[in-house]
Image 1: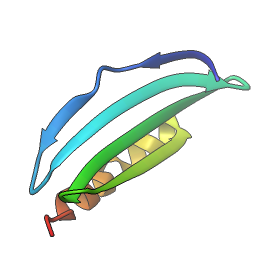
Image 2 (image 1 turned 90 degrees about the vertical axis):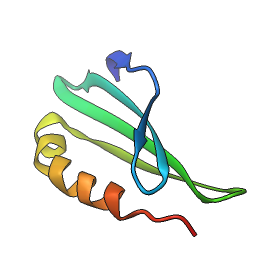
Image 3 (image 1 turned 45 degrees about the vertical axis):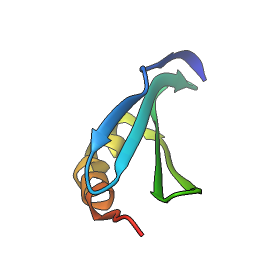
Length: 75
């Protein structure tokens, strides 16, 4: 990926704390978005959701990703 720019890690407070980092860049002339969401639904258990998609697909899936993130509950 060329011209990769990565955001600072930021926290999103939902039912569990989510830690998010976003990246943007291009590959073969196509604008891409990378997103990693990390969370621990229970002490000692860690999970991550990774998205790697074109900018257009990322925008189309933005609302659904919010639904998924808000559905994560503590165990």
